[in-house]
Amino acid sequence: MWRARLGIAAVLLLTCGPAAADPFASMSLIRPPRSSVAPEFSLRSPDGKASIRRSDYAGKVLLLNFWATWCPPCREEMPGMQRLYERYRDRGLVVVAVALDTNATGIQAFVKQQGFSFPVAQDVDGEVAERYRVLRLPSTFLVDRAGNTVALAMGPREWDTTPSHAVIETLLK
Image (cartoon, rainbow, N blue to C red; front, top):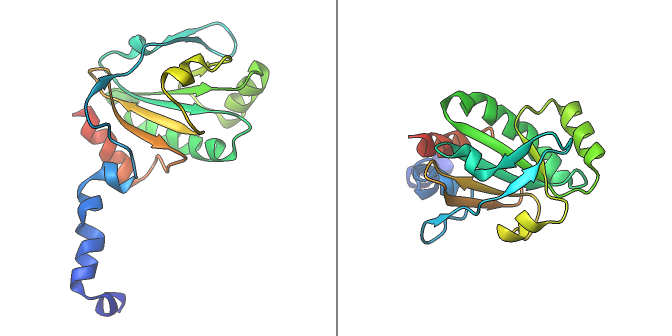
């Protein structure tokens, strides 16, 4: 019935239009005009036991998320990132969540409570966020297997959806 009201052309545009053909566009991801190598970083996990560097994930697809425990949209999008990570980690996806909080204990408690299994790093002084030019939280950078930043999400996204799966599938090829 709704198809009759909209007309077949409108239905085709909605279901098969440019956004449907380009999963990056359907997620409103920003694509840089030219390829650039993602900046290197070295951070510690909130417990101080692990060092996390971008170069540790060479040859993998990296979803690098900047967030904070005090940021409600950040907290809301993270369970979807966990499901995405679980779905694709065996195929080469790594999710790294970079917390901009100063309270390591609060980060650890949140991560443990939520059951996140992806690596979490802490950027206490905001140096890495500045290097990536993070302007708002959450901000997520997609880095391809060659180490190039290929897309950016400013603001929250649904990370466990058909378009997000299509984006990751594209990058894993």
